[in-house]
Length: 188
Image (cartoon, rainbow, N blue to C red; front, side, top):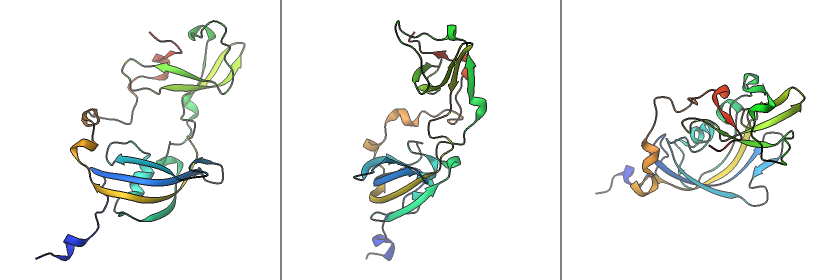
């Protein structure tokens, strides 16, 4: 005989749930980032840090078919801006291809010894004494507003999870090399 719990919809867990959403995201009080004209679709497995923490946190306990609207504070999105992550570096430390002139807003690749650092940084200013670079994420400091519908929620299957995702370090949240140890704009 079936019990009432056999008919309860699956609730998203903080780890091991496959989730598929249709969504629109914007900077609170600002422009849309995704889904402005048509909702975007995204899927992920909870517990692997593939989406911002505040989005995943607000989906835990929710079920398939739910339509939600909420804001995620900067601390739970891409973090708060940290002015200690803005550096003036000597021009000689950069390796631009011939003919490429750096400019404010330019994103440049960054290499770290162990693949844990950011993939790129943004040039904030070009001065005679060097280049000001910003290691903050471009959306750091901004709260994000979501409008979404959960279109699928279920326990994840082995085929939903890549083997590399299970190879976690003791502290996934920290880059293991510091900005002064990174090589700027050079492929080695």
